[in-house]
Amino acid sequence: MCLAVPGELLEIEGDDPLTREGRVAFAGVVRRVNLAYVPEAVPGAYVLVHAGFAIAVIDEAEARRTLALLDEIPPESRR
Amino acid sequence: MKHVDEYRNAADAHRYAEAIARIVTRPWSIMEICGGQTHSIVRHGIDRLLPDGVTLLHGPGCPVCVTPPGMIDAAIAIANRPEAILCSFGDMLRVPGNEGSLLAAKARGADVRMVYSPLDALDIARDNPEREVVFFAIGFETTAPATAMAVLQAELRALANFSLLVSHVLVPPAMEALLSDPASDVDGFLAAGHVCTVVGYEDYTPIAQRYRIPIVVTGFEPLDLMQGLYMCLRQLEEGRHEVENQYSRSVRAAGNPAAREAVERVFAVRPQEWRGMGSIAASGLGLRPHYARFDALERFPAIAVGAESESACISGEVLRGVSKPCDCPAFGAACTPEHPLGATMVSSEGACAAYYRYRRQPPVREAVA
Ligand code: SF4
Image (cartoon, rainbow over all chains, first blue to last red; front, side, top):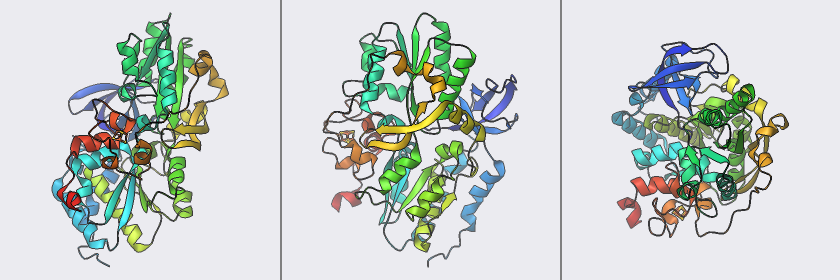
């Protein structure tokens, strides 16, 4: 129910803050998505989409950091 | 798919499992709040990668499952009126109220429609000016901004034939209700990443402190879940009880300010009935008086929301993490996804449905224990 899927924002249409929409690509499927809640989104960014709304712009640096964390775990962490 | 595939690497998941096994010295029970996480955990077998003694409890985080049967009965009563078109999300249509589901009402001739977004219901209202279009609005904090925007746009477009049956629920009060319940033994929480994408995680700090319990905001892919579990177990082993954010690519401390503002504008916090858990203070959203004209219960004064009737289903215990689906005598026998007795078997995110789909056979280790 709280499923939200990341997709690439291809282009933005309209400039009314409530109805601004974008075309977002999800693994080959393109859907129209309301952008009212991501005023900072620009084409090329990845947005997280739920129930027809983008609810976040994915932070690429944080994504890289999350993936790198595994390599930082000390191999001998038994206390 | 970018931002998905890289979090599904099996070798990395096993490295996390090894890292977890290295730090765990005692038994712990960790609850994932969100039904989407439950589904992912059972589907990918995350719980089976964990050392003996680390138990995952499945929480009440499936909004469809916790929608009170009386609300579903009210939705059906509205749908049965000839002038009405009742719209909701697909999963909601299949969940039984006290008597039958919206899909069953549709089969008998009611105009019930599945929508992907609340904005689709606005278009249906525009296209059917002579009908009354009602959106059955359910969901957690993740979905509330979408509902709020439907109200704001309905106001903007002066849609007179659109209203909402609101049954939105909020997560933190339910967590507190669980923690105050003597039957539950939760040592740590994985908080729901998409709920926190909207509202942030500042509200969790007082809960973590008051109940001395670690809370880790966690994503939905296997590596997210393994990392969230690692962070939570490390806190438990080190005797810490803090709020940490595993899902930082999407979640900021204050959440999404634009979305929070829209929800705040349209809704006020109110007490809310949860299926199987009773009424929980300040755990729901109701339309503010300014938007009362969009309230379906005001528009159809003859419709009342009744109470939950007795049933053999133990989904209330399943939703509180007190029982596992396989503890239910009806599981897989009298109760299956084709003939569900309770909501947790209907929704694909309900724990009973996830176990039925991926876990009909108990693992050998548990079966001989
Ligand atoms: S198996 Fe069916 S009857 Fe038992 S708790 Fe789950 S939904 Fe209810």
